[in-house]
Amino acid sequence: MVSKRLSREAGHRRKFLAIVDDTSESERAVTYASIRMQSTNGVLVLLYVFDTEDFQHFLGVEKIMREEATANAHAALDAQAARIRQKYGIEPELVVREGDRIEEIHKLIEEDQDIAILVLAAGSGKEGPGPLVASVVGKGAAFPIPVTIIPQTLSDEDIESLA
Image (cartoon, rainbow, N blue to C red; front, side, top):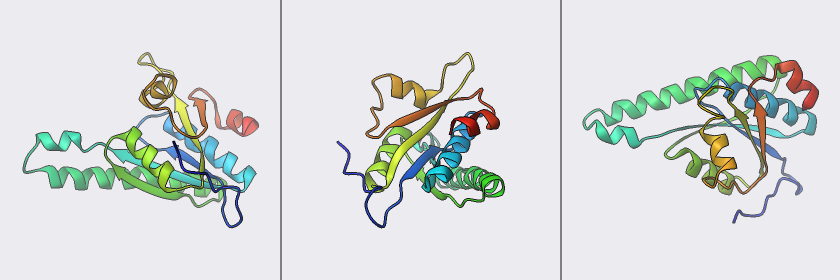
């Protein structure tokens, strides 16, 4: 069970959470969330989660691998933030977490009671819609807030007309 959402209370604004990763569909989710955020006077939160489980297999280089993963996460977030600043003139909140992606998404939603919508994008490749979208439609995630799933094939113009 998720804590009460505060986004409609005085002094709070509804937040849209988009996950940034190395997939091509991630940009679609960020674009949609940015436009929705603008049209509803909300806040955009960009989250990048990297998994530290692989680091345990390489004793002695764990610290270097963690630093590299953190730098990559910040670079990916900074690139998305620069794109939406330039295109939409908005300043997102940037969050980097390490651990299991679904667990970290749940933790952030629980910690930030203004997050009211999770925006994901579905991949269009042979491998399926992507692990996060698959977990939403499967039994794995059961996110405690509404989830909006954007098809990767939508153009920016399509997304602007829908958002």
